[in-house]
Length: 83
Image (cartoon, rainbow, N blue to C red):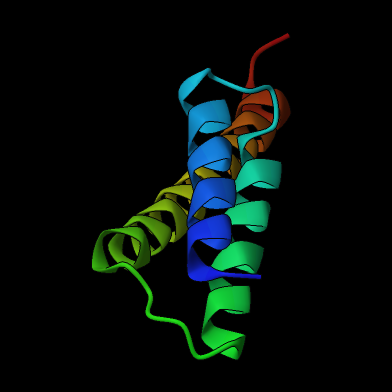
């Protein structure tokens, strides 16, 4: 498969992402897969997509951290709240 084909597939995934999908994580995983395919075939990785991948990774890590923090807070509230 050519670089242009992979780039077109990435474009479709990014369009899906732009349309506010229900499962953003799934599209993110597909983007990572496509970028890894480019790497495996020795094709050049577009710098903006490399940065985009790193930014998404950081955003998902922050979401997970926020979720874990919220869970810890909810546990304390539930345990200590006056009933």
